[in-house]
Image (cartoon, rainbow, N blue to C red; front, side, top):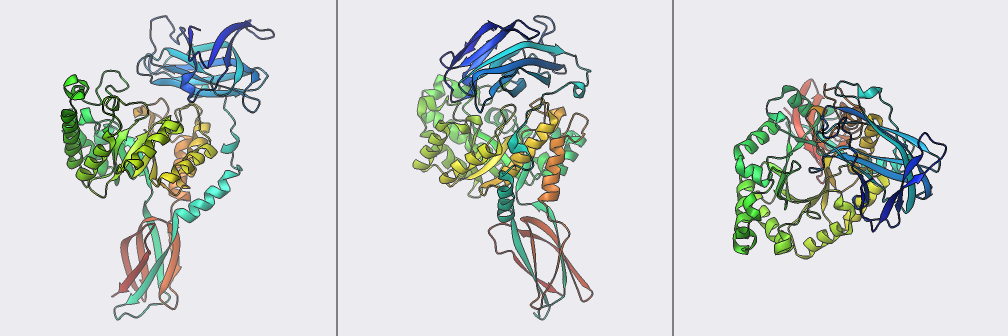
Length: 553
């Protein structure tokens, strides 16, 4: 190893071991648990390159193998470590996977797909006060043509992901209560007389709940991408072109992406993001916010700074006024604060006021945040906004679980902790980039269930759904040949089977009423009586009386 990132929380050392195929092991000692696991990482100069300096290709299929054990401490009698293999500058990760072990040596296999030049290796171990030993660490690069499904994988067992887990029963009850309603149809003839024994049928064609994806340029011209996006989602957010600098540089590109998304079936559009106090994107060179915003001319003149912010808000919100259901007004403000380091948090009120003015009263204004939702600073920022009368409507919880999987009880606990703020919630950027497709499927199922079962939640959006065009190595739904993965099958089963109302039938009573219980959404309705048929489209949404009166001619 080369060094420990966060030496105040722990250390590493090389020790002798016996009875194993290796004679030396890496001993990791966590003496104080940091607030975030990224604060304690053992780093190494070793890389997954086949030849030093040769780099790693994004197509390479690789396998990490190691053995480890708990020496002392741990949590519930187990050691926890997480291995990250990433690009040293953009931090784009090829592998970000957690494993647990008891006192006996356990062998771990983790297949992973390359990210170009992801050569930086680290081991996170700040999950409990623990002493952990790892040995026999090896990375094998099989090249681009190897079938990764032939590689072994050590799948973690999580009690809360089992089908008989106790939390499920209550979640299912809440879904029945929160996501469904009684829809009443009253049938009359042209003279106003009620019509008994009329046959009423409802068939859902759109969900009120927002199920979506972060779409890319493929939404414009890739026929397969368009087809499968349309098949699966009613909501969408663009990954890049609606950020400040990209929009300002190419507004026509933003317009073409949004128009294409609507043609591909996206009913609920999210705008992402008006303000992100960050200069470069993950590539380290593409500006997310215009370069001039970081110059002294702007950052040392509040009047100039404010006017630049106002002009941008007016420009982008006006361009899409009436089209965007949501706008992320601020994004990732726990970690990115380049403007507020100069001007303070008071800028939030002005930013949200401008967003309201230019986007309109009906647009839902969001604060969107990363894994920092688990920190105290996140709660402090929300409360500060509310104390300062910031015109905020909702909180976007990004939900990138690409290694450290938060269990359903933890997710429900997070959502419950946000209830006191009186704001709507949405999972805005779900990802689960792990090679274990079975675990990915089980985890996706339960993240969706905990989301759908929460009263404040309005949507669940993925941050990419197809391996052939995805920010992370492993998307949830489709492989590079558009074959459904386990998580894709789970998603479609939940949305279109378990949470969908179709071919629901009832007959009107003596008062001409028929009541059908179903999920909130848009429906095709058909009424047959006395040889006559009436068809129409109707919306049954939460919060309305949902009584429809039909007159048969």
